[in-house]
Image (cartoon, rainbow, N blue to C red; front, top):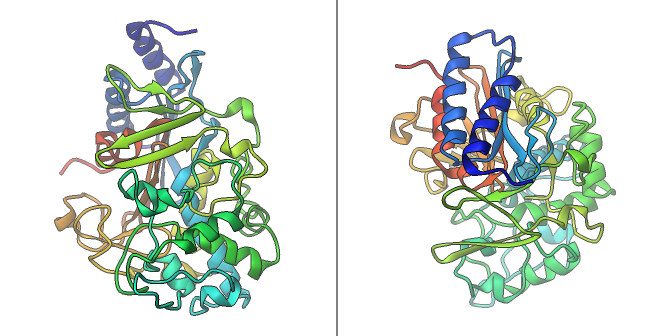
Length: 402
C-alpha cells in the first residue's frame, strides 16, 4: 500500500497525535516536543520517530509519530524495534567496564594479550601496542570505511563497518582490519573507528561467552531491556529503514549504498537476521526507544545494577579532549559517547558534562546530568534523524526558551 504524499502526511500527523502521551507532566515541554516532531513529519524529513524524555528518573514525555512502515501504512508505536547502529557502542562499553569491575580485564591491557593475531602496523612497518582504553576512546589508530573515499584502504581490503556484509565472520573482519596500516600511532590522535568491533572480540575472550550473551547478562538483562539485543526479538515489530531523498525519504533496499561527498556507507537490512554475521560491537544491535532511555538514565543515576558509580564517572569523563570534535567544537569523548566541555563554544542549551551520540540509521540521544535529563529520539530515516535539523530541533525543544 503506497498512499499519495499528501495523504501520507495527513495520516502520519493523525497517528502521531493519537499516539502522544496522554499525561505529559510538563505541558509546555509537550508542546515544544510536539511542534518539533510534527514539523519534521509534515516537511517529510523523517518518516517516523519515537521520542522519550526522562527527568529525575521519570518519563515526562513519550511519543510515537509517523510510520514504522510507510508503504504498508503501519504506524510507528512505542514498542517499534529499530536497528540501533552506533547506539550499540555505549552498551558494549558498559559490558567492558563491567568486566573490568569483575577483574577479568584491565583497560591497560594490550589487544594482543587477548587477540594474539591482531597486530596492525603503522605505514613504516612498526607494530605499536594498542590498549583497550585506546579502543574505548577511538584513539587506537583505526578508522571506518565510510569515513574514507570510495576506494579507501578499508574498502579495498573488504573491511566491514558492521552495517553490511552479512556473511562475514569476526575473525575474517579482524584479519582485514589488521591488514590495513594504522592511521596514526595509537594514543596520539582521535578517529571514529571500528575499535568497538575489535573490543567486542576481546570481551568474548575475557568473558568466555559470545558478545550477545555477555551483553544480555551484564546490561540488557538486569535492566529488563527485553526488546534490545543483537537479534530482532519480534520481527513483526521491526521498522522499515529509509534514506534522505526528495521530495520525501525513499525506502532502503535490502542492500543500499549511500554516498555523501567522497564517503560511502553500505547498509544490509538482512544483516541482523543472518546467524553468520558477527555481532558488531559498534553497530550490531536493535531495540526500542524506551529500552535505550532506561539504559542511559540508569547510568545517569549512577549505574546500578549495571555498573558502579566510579565506572560510570570514568565513562562520563572526557578522556580525549578537543581533537574529538565529531559533534562539533566544544565536545570531547569519554567511553562510548561524546562529552560536552564547552556549551557556549558548542552553541547548545545543554549543560557542561552532557553526553551525546547517535546512530546512522537515524537516531540521536543525549544525557544532561546537571539538568537530570535524558532524551532518546529514534527515527527510521538516515541521515536526518542522526545529524539533520531534526536532532537540533528536538534537542532545543527539551529546554525552556531562554
